[in-house]
Image (cartoon, rainbow, N blue to C red):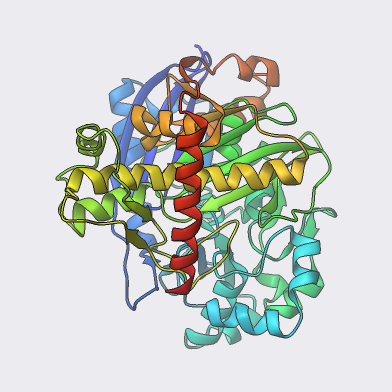
Length: 494
């Protein structure tokens, strides 16, 4: 029987299960959406029970669509929304509260207070990250302080902390395994990325008991085995795991120093392979663990724009400009330009390279002649320009420009957006046939973790569908960049 791999891609708005062959063919795929909860302005939560239900349904349906039985799966790979934080009971895996999602800004004031206390330099040196509510540590601290009895229970050893990967592994293994992988650990503000271990000084800073923490494992090795599930048999090995953006980096076969990818999803996330030594960013990026395989760690520079595809959802749900996100490209193509309209999608503050949680979205340049088509096109330009800023910062940190950008995520299917990216960033944009690179990366890691594939074998699983080359005149590009710079300043003054 040929090896088959199940990838679980647990994202911000839904869970996707995919069944892959050793050759990289997708045999079955299914996505189950679940709601986000917004109890207060700027707060974002998930009901973890809804996540688990979505996973169970997605896996069962993907297996049905692949026409394979669960016992035919050789190994499982997991990839997940990063930074999202859950505290759950050691016995039974029951969450003590909703998970706090990576987008949530409730701890922004706490981060600002720590900056004023002078903690940021130490945090950045050890973690490669900035002090921001985006990351997990202040979320854990908030739950411990604000959920009744949580800190006392944590001190007694009754609770566990996890990003979503840890929670899923605990549930999938029947409570046997409490683990996270090196890439997810590097997103918590609690992990020293050079020593590759949890750090006592950071734990003390954020008042997080060490007893809460999962074991940190590599990204392609035996992590756990399934146990006690009603939709998968016991004993299937979980051999691959990575945060979604690192999984996409791996899934795009960015194995060489200088390789870069951008995932266009809810946000836009650019990662660039920088090899086996971390580089401290001087231009507003973060340094993160890409993956650790066979005791070799690969690091990456990362820039995150918090809102990318989500701005199209806002145009759909908030303004009613389109009925479906898929309509945005056709609408934007009905006009030759945005006619001076600029949209900065800072709907959840600005991420890299600005790190301004108080920034607000800006729609400027509107006239009586402005139509919904101009706004749609400006939204796509805004996404491309966010990514351009990240690539510019990356080039400054790495000392050389990005020559080509591998792209994935749902919005990567948008030809107009991809051409705008090539034009505005002056980079070759490379799109694979399968833009589901996060799930593919999880499956590739699982296959490497079982020894079925080598890295070179994994590289062959990625095939190119189309390349987009820069075509815009430099004078037109310069005008775009000037308008964008002015709009960003306005967004930060809002």
